[in-house]
Image: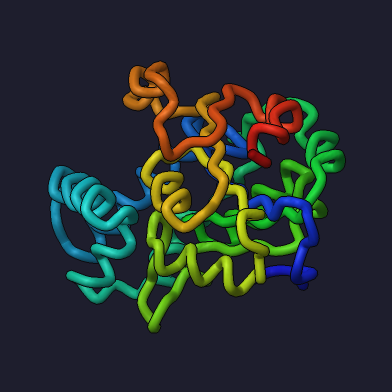
Length: 236
């Protein structure tokens, strides 16, 4: 965990922000870079062909919510080595995001916490390049998402409950801003307010994003700039 969060929070929200496809458009180039490196890694370390490496990456992502978990569980892969190898690239030229996010974050009342399934070095680099790092009092990456010594990334309810306790969030004051419906659904069951951001949705999710707002989503927005306008809806 990076930073020294001020616990409590009074009557203001504590904002938990996802990173990829929430604060920036990871589908533009970054996801392709990560996916390619993951496939390379599996191909080399498990000594399988490209097709099998792709199959395993997809299988474990769908089954466990993160390819890493399947590789650790079934192949005893070193998680830190995997994360370092698959995210070791310069994000500068790949980043795309909405303009004016720094000004928006400066005005948004309440503490901001990063909660991402990405690794620490990568997420820190992205926040610095976006010039948003100064607005986050804490940053939690996948390395910090351990419960009972096991990795529990989003949408783990055990991990989300632990985060609420760690940040000492008052009842009803936590808000998760995400592009992932499963993550929002899990958070809503624990009392989070939930915000679905659809601007950077993956192509396969775009059709679903046009459907009516799911019951576990309190606010559905197409731009982060709409967030301050709808604070009253989140306070209901």
